[in-house]
Length: 236
Ligand SMILES: *Cc1c(COP(=O)(O)O)cnc(C)c1O
Figure 1 (cartoon, rainbow, N blue to C red):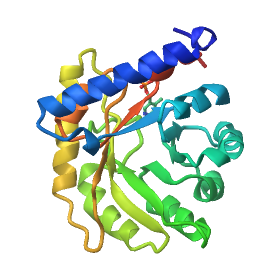
Figure 2: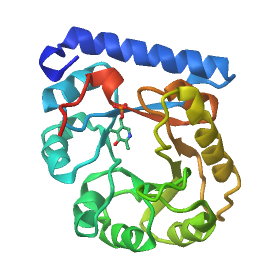
Figure 3: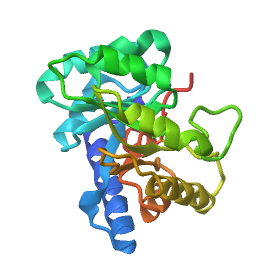
């Protein structure tokens, strides 16, 4: 399904179907469905589609590109949505991210975290942060290496204008969602083993359109869903 074909009826059906998948996976794993937040990944999709998703009751939206996200956030300010930055934060984009988003999922370096903390406006609540873990040890992927995680988490938790909330992962691509289970389980294990005084680490951001069930079964509290809600993204 492409954007061109996505009408409000299709969107409503997709939202229902994703919510049902979340409900069934939560039930299967003995967890309350309220433990899992649906984060709608709206990157590359137009403002009207975000507005329609908000009408279906979705409150959390994820964007990967600052320049694309800013006009969306500005235009939809009246809806009081919660915006998550899920891309790689570049050093020269920290200010706009700190000023416009409520959450950042891709933090993996202290220098970036320091800038986000310094640049978070005083009138805003602390910026919620998930540390990205390179759980598959992939050379080409961002994320902190598991052995460096405890030190980074402690350093970031000490920054005054950030609220460290947990971990996020993008596991290595596998053909089969079941094969992702290992990576999700490992990320959950890393979170459970992380003890940082003064923080409540309550967030595991993991699971996308193809593997949300397995992620929820392994403890995800936030699934990042694009394609299953909005259809295929234009290739670019
Ligand atoms: C694009 C993106 C998603 C959404 O992926 P889908 O497979 O379309 O659900 C989730 N997480 C991140 C970090 C992304 O960049």
